[in-house]
Length: 501
Picture (cartoon, one colour):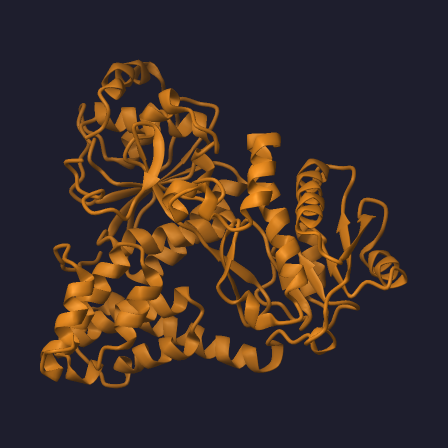
């Protein structure tokens, strides 16, 4: 249950009004009671093939709901799908294709979606979802054939000279400064024999930046950070130097073979939240996002991923961040009178900054929806301990980088990637810039690993588990946490997801 402090605060919100606009969009899945997945997998080793396949499928479902995506993938991969009943084979295909897509494994997706060729009985939304995933897998494999990242001039070569192009003035200068200072500090602490040369990207065009980097005899370029410039680069047939851009472009695909892209994408976080909510068994979602360009982009990313899973968006609210919370929650939760009507809602996705986010759960409590699961991005977490304020976020599940939630992510600070750098930066940095500093550390680590691209697949970084896709985009898989007593806590311990906690 939520903290009683919410009840004290909830009534204060009822005088506050906000305008929100509702939108729209069915599905069903059986909930499997939590069991010991390891025990099930051990049992499968002793069972006849038909029962073993079903047991492994149940174990994979449990592991997926617990967020153990790689273990869930391995369990699903070990299932002999031909031993399953038709309905279980469809369940397996939905789960395995989702896990495989999340791990950027198009060949496994194609294996799962072979059920489409067998014309098994399934719901229309399941067929649509599997067809979309099959199309993605085929496109990914086709694209990999001609745009798969390849940097032959760096293969097996020790990287000693890196040029970094970041703006020292303009709207991105404070972001760039945090990234650059973290790169310098991490470089110094590592004691690498690597020369870092910084270029003021505010003063030069893209072509001039590359000219200066080549004059420095750089082996690679880290930057730019401007989204428009990254879009320009990914539309080129090639780039003059191997490049790790610190943002993602807007193009549908990256055409430049030696261009990698890495950043802190809110859209990626939204897609991971959609996958997690679906794995937890939810199918009908309400969403609340800010009524601005950022909110629309992130909301659309969540919406598209959620529907690709086979879920339904039943209510969507775009709220004014500077207005009060009450009417946004009323619209999102179908409030009639003083009570939420949750017949077609089993979870809420929330994109909000801390001050706004802290008002949402108390308002939900007021409308008799204290146990509705809430999934959120990292943006509601300031990254520093504020137990009193964050009591109002109790039971909210959110995603964040390991450096911001060490206890939940890896079991404690000393187990974090690049701990010595973490310890120094955490003591000195502004909390609002800490994620960017973690990004700077990972950008440096990615850069010095470009001579062995296989090292980028599953790299444990400050900002998550990093994976390199076929078109050069680096994606982050983030750990989950849940506020308890105002503190981000691990989400995978037994019973933590129970409503009676």
